[in-house]
Image 1 (cartoon, rainbow, N blue to C red):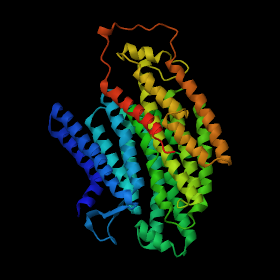
Image 2: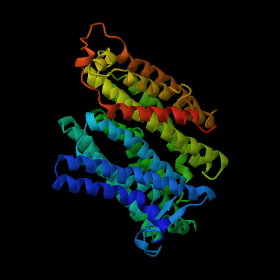
Image 3: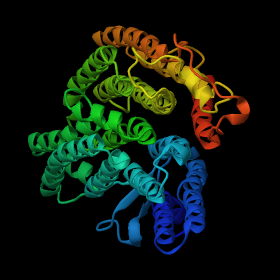
Image 4: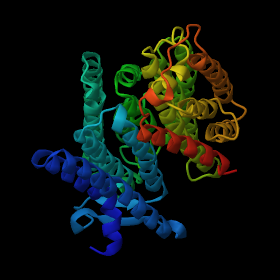
Amino acid sequence: MDTLSNILFAPVYLPLLGAALILVCKSFFKTTIRRLAEYVGMLIGLIMPVILTLTLSNELGAGRALEAVAGSWAQEIGIIYRFDGLSLLMILLAAAVTIPAWMYSRKVGPAHSSFTALLLVQNAAIAAISMTADLFNLFVCLEVMGVVAYVLIAGSQKGSAVYASFSYLMLSSTAMVFFLLGTFGLYRLTGSLSYEAIAQSLAAGENQQFALFCLILLVIPVLLRVAVLPLSLWLVDAHSKAPHAVSALLSGVLLKIPLFALVRVFALVPGSALFALPISYAGAFTALVGVLLALAQSDAKKLLAYHSISQIGYVVTAWGLALQAGVHTQAGALLLSVSFFHAFSHALFKALLFLSVGTATDAGANRNVYMLRGASRSLKGEGERLPITLLCYLVGALSIMAIPPFNGYFSKNLLTYAIKGGIHYQVLTLAGVGTVASFLKLSRIFLPAKMKLEILHPSLRPRFPLSLHTGLLILALMCILTGIFAPE
């Protein structure tokens, strides 16, 4: 295996190596060594893969994809991994949210080494999903990502969190049976699990109806994982009961990855554009209904959870219209690009919102947006000398409300411009109005409280966690920079 192939597989095996190091040190060494192993594991498993991935991106300048076969097997029997621009986007998206969320969790929780190891395993699965060109391998990696998510949701070890995790487990596992059946159907039809071989076999046009039926079986579980209405009921409990860092990961990363992976699967089956328009309508419906449900919420985290559903509706709408137009056409390529751009922007500002709002509600010991007031003063009482949490919340809120110069303004405007003129545009415009209204409502938690809260003298206040602020500031900075340097 040459050097290029080794680098290509690094985003998969380095996180697993980092996770193994952390778990071994947890089992055999004392606290200091365990903590050191966590930082070394994160360096090996998350920072190094990003650097190597950016190195690989230089090879994509000629407009080509990089390929390698796992284990150096022959292509006919091996699992092919293909690195392209979409792979780069998915790996960077995962890292951009995971690193700040992990830093935030150091003081807020979950802060144990098993949590760090799980994050690394999840990033290995995401990297494999982003590069695999094998349908069964995609199924396995989606399941690994799902299993890790079940454990992370239950991380607070509260009964409600365990129940939310179990509900997601049951729904997702049942749905993935359909994905496996669809995979088996295409294998029986084509005699292969390789994307390239499946596409070549189906290009002849034989048994097209059965191939489309298999595609439906593949799409259903992905739409559930992505939380498109009415398949999104699991998400609200999962987001609201999970630790704040996990909520940021769920909304920022795990909702996007299956949808990105499905782009390649759609390209395998001739006639798949038949389902594109219904999917786009489902996305528009999700965007509007999600924001209406968010407006009705009093729980701050549930409000954010419904907004995750709404914002994924924007992404799915543009994604479906891109498939209908044909991803190789100019219009289709534009729609697909803005779909990915808004997904990336949403990952950043929604992760920032979950972490900043979570910090504020913890300080105020209340998540009811009608009752909680003076969150900034409560944070000051806990040792926050500068209103960093409030400022970071404002960056996230202005981003999701599409206020310039933040990333949400550019991604939403590019998306709505690309679909301008149809019913989708009108529905998404209404959803945008609802988004502004609901975040004006949520912002009430930072208004001054009527009752005066006791503030300790500065010398007596606890020291506010630096890692918490660092995680928030990294996300806020990325929201600003991806807005300033957004593509025109």
